[in-house]
Image 1 (cartoon, rainbow, N blue to C red):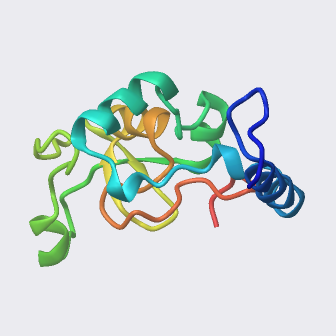
Image 2 (cartoon, rainbow, N blue to C red):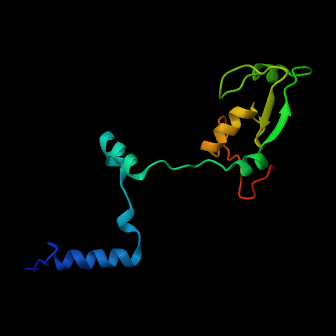
Length: 136
């Protein structure tokens, strides 16, 4: 019979843990969230805190092209997409739009606020800023 050490773990468990640590030094940090209950996930969120995946203002400026809204000469497709999908308001002639590298337009203020929270287009989920940070 294997003797228990002072931590209440058997020698066999310690050997398994040591071999696991040798192959994956972060194994004890891995979580299996698939089997967690809603309450456990909420508790995990409280422990982890808010993870910001947004962009800094400098990065936003470099990946966003500001254009003026002009309804003249628009195609039918442009007219159908003549509202901001973030705030759902229609564009007006005086509105300043922000265009991402994927080609989607939004109110400039709306997309700037969005990008501070998430580095992705709200429509197609493409990354707004790549590693170089510029418009392609």
